[in-house]
Amino acid sequence: MLIEEELLLSYGAVIEDYGRSHIIFDEGDIPKFYYQIVKGRIKLNHYNEDGKELILAILSPGLSVCELLLFIEKKYPVNAVVFEQCTVLKLPKSNFVRLMDENPPISRDVNKFLSERLYYKYIMLQNNSSMYADVRIIGVLDYHKSFYEDQRKFSFEVPLTRQQLASMTGLRVETVIRTIKKLEQQGIVKVINRKIYY
Image 1: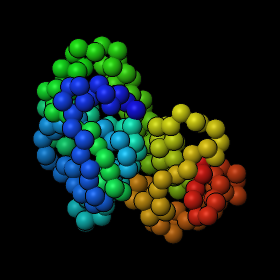
Image 2: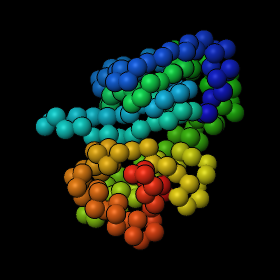
Image 3: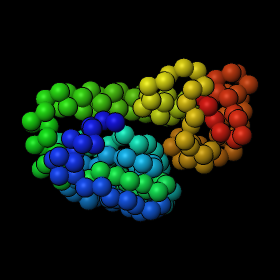
Image 4: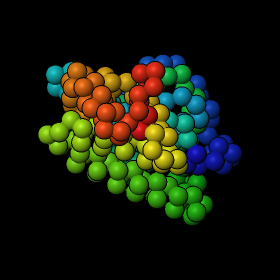
């Protein structure tokens, strides 16, 4: 959990429940709240000029949603869409800023978290520019696994379908399916009951 639930509540956060496909914010909205996931998952996406969805991240419990935009005066460059039934802590921006000012250790933790996310995002972007499907897919898997403490081989159940991996890498679904099979043969991933473990 990025920030303890009790601390967020003490600064005025409210708990909100959202159903699948609920839009928390749209691309172009002005950031007004800090969001932290308690239960469920949220995807950050964007649609290109052809209407094709590009998934930028799928966020899990304990993670915050686009918190970096609370530090600058910019509009959201992505949509935040509930991926599965979700419970979220929602804190007004002014209260979040006060929480950061009054709790330097929390502020340092948030800065460290942002730095780690940016680091892995750069790595993923580098990998996504590769001509090789396996490099792109491994980049996405590394990025998502980086959110979890357990980094042992095959400890991470990938929360993405083959279609979502395709949307994140710009590959065709058929290419993702073939590449996952190849990665399994190479011992890089395991597939159990159609779930990918990395």
